[in-house]
Amino acid sequence: MQIPDGFKTFVYSENLKFTLDVNPLKKGTNTISVSVFDLDGNTPKDITELKAKISNPQKNIAPIELPLTKKEDRYEGTATIGFSGKWEIELNAIRKDNPNESVTLSVLVKPRLSELKTDITEYTLPEKAAPLYPVYDGNDTIWISDSSQARLWKFSISQKQFTQYKFDGKTTVFLKLDGNKIWFTDTPEGKIGYFDIQSEKFNVIDLPLKSIPISLEKDNAGNVWVALVDQHMLLKYDPISKQFQQFKTPTNPSGPLALTKDQNGMIWFAESQGGRIGVIQPDSGKIQEFAPKELLKEPFFLSFDKDGSILISEHAALRIIRYDPYLNTFSPVVSLADPTALPFAIAADKFGNVWVAQHTADKLGIFDPQKREFDELIIPSQTSFTQFLLNDNSGDIWFVEQRANKLGHVSISEAQQITTVPVSKGFEIRYSEMITPIVAAGIIATSLFFVKSVNDRRKIEQMID
Image 1 (cartoon, rainbow, N blue to C red):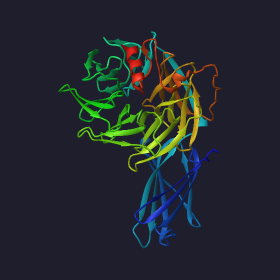
Image 2 (image 1 turned 90 degrees about the horizontal axis):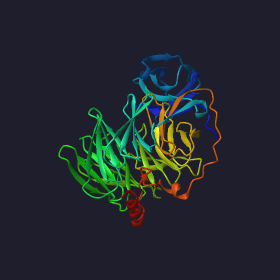
Image 3 (image 1 turned 30 degrees about the vertical axis):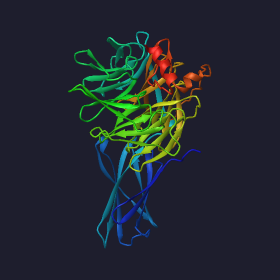
Image 4 (image 1 turned 180 degrees about the horizontal axis):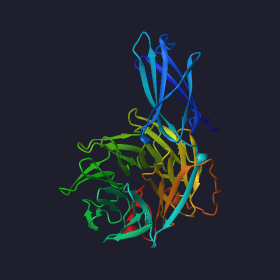
């Protein structure tokens, strides 16, 4: 059932409760209805006037007063909203026998998914490759790893051109952009390294033990953290002293991957084999683990939302789940419509919609957390095998098509309606591809390298040796 347009909420000042109803919460004319109660739920008798103002600080629109008329136990008025975005509404209760009280709250004006206009442009790499993991420099460049060769790809957004940079190794898998350095994992070699953007030189670093390094993250002190999926361990590398420290996860096996840093500098990770997520304090090395009553089913990717909660893609459960670190609670967000889709990376667009890479289906998932709606966008190329995506500074989405050898761009704007293209039925997926990304023809074809048993690990080592 479709959630109707409109927005309802309530907020407390010191002694009052303000309830706000904005309808339809869209561009154009909106009706605003406000009711005020004391903390016992009664209507205060000494309120002589209720004032309302609306503003948009992001667009430098100063507060505009909205005339309100009292109708029985509520105040009503209208507001004309010229464009989508985050708007602030200030409510001020003028009181006769008590101090005035005011509150300010934010509302997000946005189109429904059916009102989005999405245009996909695909850019083919100039040589045969296996592009995998993208990072964005916040300006004009997207860097992409290559799981088929020891090289990085640079894509200029303005010039629409690719440039490749090679080094002596086997592959690049996960990337981490750090100023003028791009850190990478050379997973089959069991090494990490970085590319200096200014000098255009590579520096490769041996790990202190034979292992399968996956993702990377940097802490606030400049140390580089590496997830070792087969050793159930996190490595901390000090670029100054060039020394490593090892931190075993409490759960074994855990299969750590998907490192990401929160606003306090803590390093979070997913335990793909342990069914948990974890966090480590970079200074002390203390690790905590969290899990719902039923363990997570192959958590592969973590992403923080605007409220500081962690969105987790459960690869085998075909859903996105949210973890609130303040309340220590897990809650479902959305289940994918396609049972073969297998969710991977997550990114938010300019309207706050959550985009999901569905790497075994040629579709991108789109979830509107405000209206609880889910839709899909067809990727033009078949067998694209899209695992990772990101957003740019305009709120558009970029995604990497590993098997189609392309970089895709979704231009997102507002329109009256969006046309849904039927899904192609011509692509069949082998069972082995549905469970985990594979290693084919001696080429590491994915970021996962998920080792479920000693036999699995031996098979992988034979393929990458």
